[in-house]
Length: 520
Image (cartoon, rainbow, N blue to C red; front, side):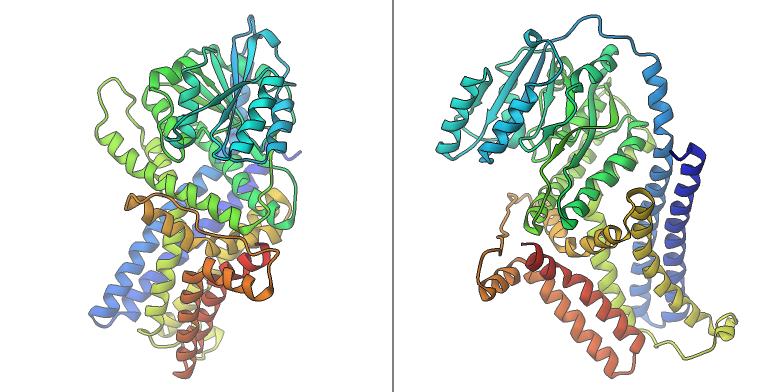
């Protein structure tokens, strides 16, 4: 197993890549000001490019810092473990599973597996929180729950999303702790409760979140799993050091008294993130344990990934607005946020919305730059080093910036997950999901109800599948076609550099159509 020093060295290498990416982006921005700008139009473009580069650079540097810092979380956790005492008594625990029109066979299998938790049977109670709208599912689950000693709860009115179901459970339960699992999560380590409960010796500990992962599946589903893996391997440990580890909605344990003091789960689409903030604001602490106790069902289709990302990004945008309002109106007696905590919450609120909006804006600006600037001259390597050809040198740095942005995730996944291909797929997915994430952010800002309007195209004729795919990716296809036309126009006016650049962007954004078609 690699030593801490070797891990630190590898992480410093990755950090150096992100720093280089930031510096090259800023250098290219300065080039636009000093060599590309010659009137109000080009100055405006160059200035906007610099603003985007500064914002992007800030997030790159902070994320790199978090990534490097996470390497030392193991030492921090070991220090806590040394102070733990064995359980002297077994507190009561409610194990809850919220469901909504889910596959009944999966729900039943995973609930029965949860009953294998290594814990005294008289100190644990199981709850099935059924929000299903299909009567056949509800009838069957109710019958199953009764036969297996599981408390079945169903609301007359389904509001407040998942948080509403959890808050309804609080009215019917009195257990001291609440363990949450999603319907698709299969318990693989029955020591979940006996491992986590000793950490709650501090009365101020509100919750513990464990690592969430998916079972192995296809190349696509395993790549999707890396989205969670990046967050739980690198972001959560760093945040935990700031007491801002996010409760991820399942595979976690919550102290009931803390939840009551907070006022229950905030009824938003991502109630877990809002609960995490309120826990922090109410002067509670939290903890993250980097261990997998249950694996979820893989995401096999691109449509399912899109729906998941829509919900996440809609919720993250709501959270950002909530957080800014919350700290502005913060009352006396509640925790004052440190600079690192503030950045943690703001970056989480921006989340992948920021990545997507920045990508789209950089793409649009690149097109404007290409048609506002003079194409690079054909010169030798030695000439590139002279001041006379510094403008062309900066244009090459611009290309280098893009290349590094491709290499960074590929190298990162190679180091930590032994796969360059998945890293390249992650890079591609960021472009494929950029419009979807941006639309989700806009919907949240406009306070419109979140929707999932995408349909799967499998098991259909070729023609209908193509039409469904076009409908699902209409914005992306339209944007790709516009970039393709601009690329052809750039080639006609002999701007080969600009034509190649725009063609590459057109290919990247067309990946939405390709992924919808290929993976359903």
